[in-house]
Image 1 (cartoon, helix red, strand yellow):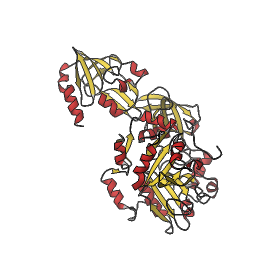
Image 2: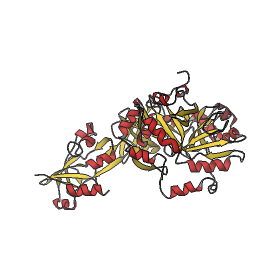
Image 3: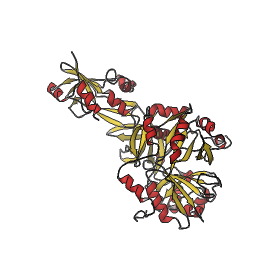
Image 4: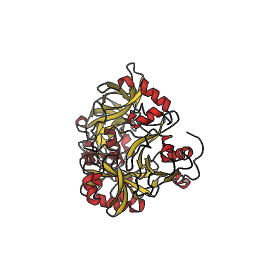
Length: 124
Length: 393
């Protein structure tokens, strides 16, 4: 059974046991505009909560994607290399950035649930 | 440049407004109603995009886009000796500029560095500004206060400079711009690239030039601020026209090889390094009498150390302003001054200053950004061909 959490940096993380998938939210992709490039981490990369884990570039600017939790990357989404616009069209499904194994599941406690994130975005 | 404070007659109140925060342009409410996402630029709130930069960019290349460029400075020069006075500050042949003719020029510092780039037009008897023989100038928004101070400092007292801050400025750009505009203003189709005239558009008296900064055919329209909303509505009621934001303006001008002041041009850059030799008129080159003439002529003969070029970047990742150009030994030898994704070409492009020996189309250039290497290929400018409506074409 998966559960999805959200960070204040507009990443989502869908967790199933100790593995998870990470991407950026629909709100984030709308703010960035047309995505033309995404650089995702390779398998084995250690990522740390709140630190840069990937790069997403819109027509106008480059932005960092932060790891919402710490862990080791299982895979980056290879589909983004061919079609970075998946981040625009399917940000919370096919446009995922990477999967990882959580090193400290308790880090999830500091993240928001769906309702919490909606309220957070409405307050921006 | 002088370090003298800005002359008291140079509209101090406006500067206070800018220091207090970004100002709203006359079309502010119109942009918001059209879904424009507003950002601060050059001291003003301006739309960066409406439906999206990519779609807006491609719309302009295929149809016609309406840009609000009211942040730019519109200046009017009148009085005895206006051409001579301006020729002392910039390298254009102002004396030889015919009525209704427009030229691109540069405001130069004493050392030949570029203070701003601008457009000049000699006004005929009939214009919106009632100044026969006067010069109408459009300067960059971010530099207009410095330009005004510089011009007031150095122009003779006999020349009157007016800041036309009650005028808004719109640009209608794209291959269908002429179709859309001629429907509202019969006669504009007779203008050719870099000519201008007075026209009534949808009942509004305007000053129209056939020019712009996208590489496309199109027009720039000076209109009283009180009428600009009605004009924008009339233009956007045409099926060819959509409002376009600053984001697409930047990607369009980059593809067109057109430099942006404060990025590709600055006080450290000379017209020769910037590859703007065309802005140095033949008579002025020979006679001199503009700031930096000796240095600029020396650079012209010996070649500049660095030269502005266009690059197509390998791969898909954009290389942006601030990235470095490396020489064969891995040392910094130049810099990227503009860069991004080209919607028309579907790949990353850039403008960069590179060693003059490398400024040859086909040369491979090594770039570095955030610790990562990229390869750029020097490519003839413009990257997307200009489609100006030139005389005789």
